[in-house]
Length: 320
Image 1 (cartoon, one colour):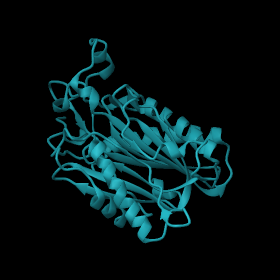
Image 2 (cartoon, helix red, strand yellow):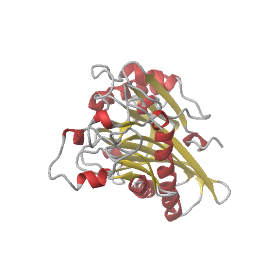
Image 3 (cartoon, one colour):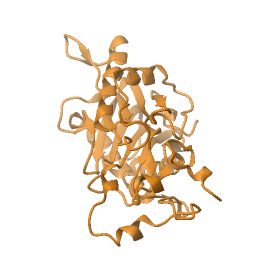
C-alpha cells in the first residue's frame, strides 16, 4: 500500500501544477465507473455536477472527480477531463453518445500568485495524462498548489498548505482512503495528540495564534472570510449503494471538524465526495468512522508536506 487514495483499486490520481502562478488542479480518475456521493457543509461552495450524486437522481456511477484552484473559473478544467474520458470511450451511455460524468469542486487561491491565471480545459486534460495508480505526490501540488491556512489575520500571516492523502486497511481486505485539499481559514490540529500544527503566525514568526481566540474578539466578517474551502475525496473498495456512499461522505466530514478549527463556516465551500469501487462487504457505520479518521490524518499531511510558495511560508520554513 502507498498510504494513498490509490490503494483503492480502480482509482488513479493526476496533478497539473503551475508553481509560477501558484495554482493547479487534481483529477481522481475512476474510468470504469464508481458509485458516487457528496456532502457539502460549507455555505459558499464552488461545485459542478453535485446534484446528480443525490440518492433520488438518475446517474449511479461517475468516471472522475476534479479538484481545482482558480475559484469558480477553475471549474472549466472539468471540460478537459471529460474530453480525456470521451477519447477513451468512457461515459454514461445516452445511446447517441457517451457522456463522462465528472463532478468538480474548487478552492479560492486567487490571493496567492497570479489571480489572472486559472486551471482550464487544457490543464484538466494534462492532469489526466499524468494520472497514476501508484504513490500520490503530496503537498503544494495540483489543486493544493495555492492552498493556505491560518488566514484570520490576512494572507500575510498565513501558512502554506496543500494536498494530502492517507489510507487504512481494516478487517484484512477493506480499504478506506482519502485525498484532501486544505485551504482553511482556521488552525490545523493533529487529532492524535491535540497539537496545533498550523495557524496564523505570531509576531515573532515562531509559533501560532489561536484562530478561535481571535474570533472571540470580533463581531463581524473580515476580508479573509471569502477565501476558504477544504475539498476531499473518500474512496473504498467496499460495495455501497448510492444512499450508503452519500452517508459515507457525510460521516467523513467529521474528519474536517477534528483537524480544522473552525470549519464549515458561511464563507467556506467545504465539500466531501465519496466513491465506492469493488465488491467487498463492510458495515457503513464502520466505513464512515474510519473515513473520518483517514480524512483528519490526510489534512495534517497536507500541511506537513507543503512547501513555501507565493511568499507564504510552510511550517518547515518558519523560524525555529
